[in-house]
Length: 508
Image 1 (cartoon, rainbow, N blue to C red):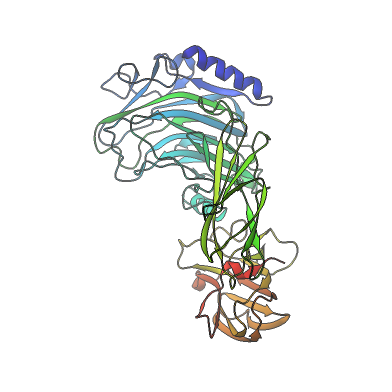
Image 2 (cartoon, rainbow, N blue to C red):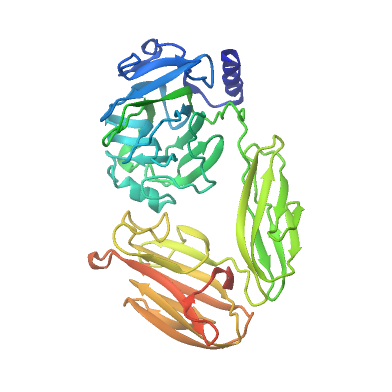
């Protein structure tokens, strides 16, 4: 088994033309300090660290692995290792096994491992720390902290939230991560590429059991005063915040830290493909057109496409057409597979109805500052105009614009609105700090300088016809109005007041 492991790593090195393995550790013996490990916790079965193997546990590689004992209460870090060179991007992979009697802590933690960039005073006092954490539900996730940069330690959670993440962690925005299963090796991989100073082009990724689950590709990570920081060392982390509630143990094996992706033992370097698709349907038509041509494979290999339309019918190919017999809601699934058998599925819930559109939303354009001028910072399709925040912990309107509090931005949404009935309609815009609405070429709501709920009658509309619409909104930095909202409703004789659904908006 050890021989196979070494051959695998050598294979990966030949594939990484520009990459470099920084650390490789299978924990076959206790001679860690001779291999560059420092600040090692106490050895011995009744202390913190020991080497274990069969029959107690079957390692994922070689004959031995690391056994980590958690005493009840607070614990410190297990060990550190510095990289042979400082690097701008780092990839880490290792395997963890939690026994059947393992109990997750009731509170926060544990921090399982941390990679550091720049200066280091303590795990919570660094220029940049990227954490791999487990949670009390058996979840795996990545987060970041920047105690010595302009965002501060806790402030970086808001940066993550603003640029596509969640409070204090990356979201599962690619696929759902496997939960830890007792007595089974659980593979974690995470990757980070430092941003250019002052730029939002840093990257964070997380794989769980060989599956990409989290990915943010445009993230600020380095401020203007820390332009020279690089990743320089890795720490096998502890429980902080109260520690384990009882004495227990788990295992770690097959650690590799590199400058490029390597992969798991199971997948031998091959990454899962990515399934993506769009759909369109003409007004009053029961036939939907599906386009999966934006699906991709990281290695560039050809893909196979398998469609499930949710009504018992299936098809294949990158672009397909399907006619539904019965009006209703359907879950459409596109599964793509590469030439090694790796698969990824994407699902979309659609509604097929002769009086419901198939729109995808409006074109959203977003600016820093309250003036809509110059090229936008971000342009993307926005499904609905339904944004609101109550208090400091609310979500950002969108990533990449405004300040770190989610304020001081402006935006414009343009496209077409398609009514579902032929009758008079009223539009209602709930907005704070301010906004405007143009419908069919006319300014119908002007609340730019005064937050309010503003209604406007737009006359008799024709079902299925697409009317041009433009909505603008801004938010300042006034201390008394930290909340924001931008919500567009419609109502008619046949439609009670509701947020305008995505299917009735079409990009320009």
